[in-house]
Image (cartoon, rainbow, N blue to C red; front, side):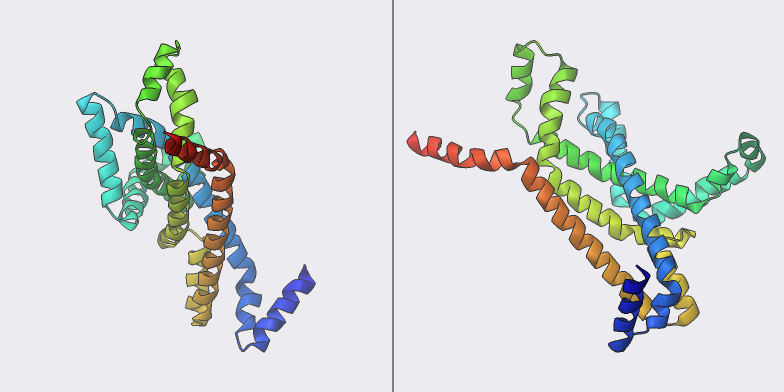
Length: 259
């Protein structure tokens, strides 16, 4: 591995780029990349879990419940993510800091003083709003007759949603979920502004010490590679999970022509 790294640095130097920058800050870039991926993974998973009740509330027949869900979604989709991160980091941080001794007694202060966890909360709340709308759109795109059919088979509402509606809605929503993942990955750079040493945070540090624009160039390349990899893998996943739909389309077309 060291040999490959040395060869890569040599190649970088041969094309006229600053190999010393990568030699010095390369390990920090990798550490920042790992933190970026962890931040995005946690936010996407927690946001997905939170989006389920929000999406159901958004479709509720209860006006108050539906209004609360709409207000949540409208706020987090209608305000900049940067403002949300600052609001949670500064607002919630100041409130919790005022009760520092209480949380120290509970042994939780180490968790609450780290900007990373505030970023996770902000990103989770933000993506939950988008994922709730994605899920709602997927559910509402399905034929309504499936619910009646499930009831006719003796299934209760929970079974119909869990075994019939939800799997199909998730299948329909695969591409929007992939787009949301890519958007969250690119938006993760906002976390650098609240002292989270993720990829962009390390880049800002490297540039502040070297004033070499190549720090941002390498970061842009890393983001491009990650976005390309995610898009490619997601397309393969979508094709694999929806292959039965592609096989069914010619049969449906032939049936329609026969009639």
